[in-house]
Picture 1 (cartoon, rainbow, N blue to C red):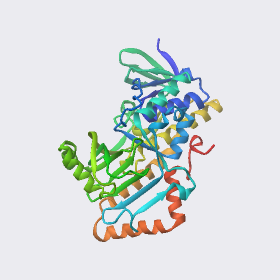
Picture 2: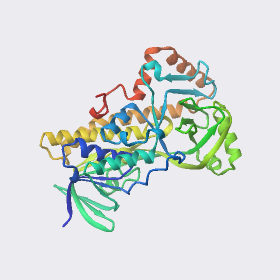
Picture 3: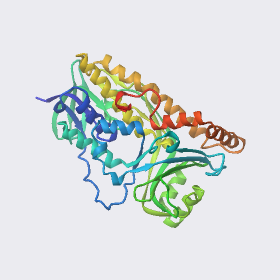
Picture 4: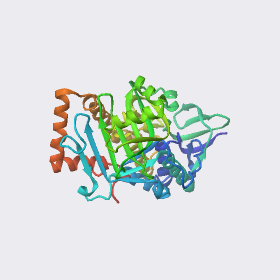
Amino acid sequence: MSAEFDVAVVGGGLAGACVAALLARHSGLEAARIALLAEAPAPPPAANAPPELRVVAVSRASERILAAAGAWSRLPGRRLCAYERMCVWHESARPDGPGALCFDAADLGEPDLGHIAESGLLQAACVASFRDAGGTLLTHPLSALRIDASHAHLTLRDAPALSARLVIGADGASSLVRTQLRMPAHMRDYRELALVATVRTERPHRHTAWQRFLATGPLALLPLFDGSSSIVWTIGARRGASLRDCAAPAFEAQVEAASGAVLGAVRLAGERRSFALHALAAETYVAARCALMGDAAHVIHPLAGQGANLGLLDAAALCEAVAEARAAREDPGALRALRRYEQRRRTHNLLMAAAIDALHGGFARAGGPAAWLLNRGLDVVNRSAPLKRLFARRALGLAGELPRLARPA
């Protein structure tokens, strides 16, 4: 006889771990009847360990969601880096010139614009919060999924099967949940790599996030807690592979040139990795007794660093829909309850994906007269306090329609 749960979350990445923690604390369901299928998180890093290679730019809305999940307070403050300024410019302009778009938290009356946090620490904090709330962590992966009128039936590898009234697919772009239930999704290959590394620079990062748009793709330098910077360089697949594998001095020279030497000389501080980039959009986020979220439902280009934040907004909206169903004594896996989540998130995610693709196809690739027009547009935004404030508040998660758990208390 299989174990029975109210909700089974498949996938323990940041979005999946966060929705499990939110459900355990805010859905009205008994925490012990919520299962999270995920690998056990890695042990916390030593106090003097260097930053992880994968980091997330956490918006203010995401910070609120993580706080509601009981995760934010578990993060070691010494390993977070608040960024107070952001500077974006095209390669045909200067970062300190009129063609650059710069935001400062002080202009918004905010202490910062967000935090750069290590992905592994965020995920581990969410899992720890989920377990402390009484949730059930299962470390055996899903191997098969079947849905009937009353339950989702999950077959696990090397472990007894289980059933749940609702299964949440948070298992990434290659989602087994989505595939098993034949929920269609559109995928598009960007034919690019995201090259990530940690570097030390001649000049301090000044708690500023820098991004330069090049004809070959955008390069971001994100400030880290130990004074180093995380780089995310989106570039064509062939050149990206060459940069990943070349000798360190050659790589350092290329990063310095690509950044316009905005932080001076660059020195590689560890390994380099690359990730193939593609876009994904599920045709529907929900089916009877199933909801998709995070990368299982949508993948966007990383140039604006919004992928993780969208997944956390999904988590908050899905928890809200389940809590509303519980309060109305509805079945949390009923399609009517799940549609509320899809209506709140799918359009927002599609609009964000379209905006990012337009930026990627326009600003990042523009040259000649087009570059002049784009720089002129940035200058107009920079000179208009209302426009600039609107852009910044949207990025912070202080404006627009937000799930309840992402709003100010």
